[in-house]
Each structure stands twice: as structure tokens, then as C-alpha cells.
Image (tube, rainbow, N blue to C red; front, side):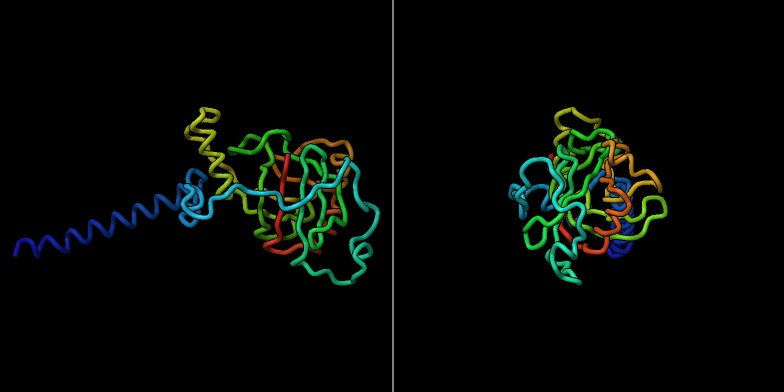
Length: 228
């Protein structure tokens, strides 16, 4: 009889422990200390853990491809099939290139975070992340014309973050960061791009006329590859 009386009490303890643990996990994930549950298998290499291979073949040299032409004129279509579009960003060349069906069609000049050389491993390091990402959302932005929000941090991003902690390169309580995207510049500030002034906190920045054109040909799920 006494055991039966304890059973409901034990159930309540377990129930509230699960609720508390779930809430704590959610808050730590929201703050950037731990990954989302659905990413865990990929992060610990128990699922789909293979080395990332490059998606694009970069252009030779440092030139901008077809920069003074409209994309619709280059492709010869009034309507572009967005599922065929992908993006390659080369940090060392300050260049973003749009690919259509894996073929390069147009490049734009870009700038990066104030620490443009290093890969991003934590919040506040002012670096632009490297790897393969997808556009998770896109929307008009009041200060920078348009914003293409990429899905950083990915499982690969988390592995780099944890490795940096293990190697003592960053503090144990550092957060991974978030809100990385591709966007424009403040109105009238195209010179930031012309002068290669790396002014962002880690995002990729284009001139407003360029981000406006890019905005028209991408969608949620468009792949974005960022290389050194």
C-alpha cells in the first residue's frame, strides 16, 4: 500500500524534472551555449558525418564576372528557376558569385566582418563563418535594404566551436553566435564595399543595388558556400 502511495509522487517528481530539464535545455540552446536536439547526431558524427566537399568550382583570378549586366539578360530568361541558383562567397577575393545549374553567371563585390581572415568560432569574434549553409529566411531590412539569413550555426559550425574550446582557443563559456546573413549597406554607403571596408560583425555585405538583385533570384533553401 505504501508503495502505491509513493508511485504518484515519484511520477510527479519525474514529470517536473523532465519539464525543468527541457526548459533549461531550450534556454541554453536559445542563448547559443548548446546545439538544438535535432543537430546532435550530426555533431557527434553518429549520422551523416562526412567531410564537406566544395559545391562550386571557383572562377580563376579576381575579376568580377558580368558585373555590369543584369542576371536576366545573362541567362536570357525573364523568369529564373530559383531552384537552380546557388552562391559561392570567396573571402580572400571579396567576391560573391551566383551560379545557375552549377555554372557561374555573375559576381558581386562584397565585404565581411571586421576580422575577415579567420573562420567564425564564437559570438563576438567579428569573423565571417566558412562552410556550406542554406538561406533559412529572407526579408526587407530597414537599415540594410535586404537580409538573407543563413542557417549558421550548422553541425559543422558546432564541431569547430567545440574543438576551439577543447584546444583552449576560446573560453569554455563562450557562445557560438547566430544571426549571420547577407545584406546591403546603410543608405549612401556603397563606398564601404568599393573600399573593401570590412564593417560588419560577421555578415556578408553588398551594395544595396546588388543585394536587391540577388534578393529576386534566391529563396529559402538556396545553398551558400563560403570559403577562405
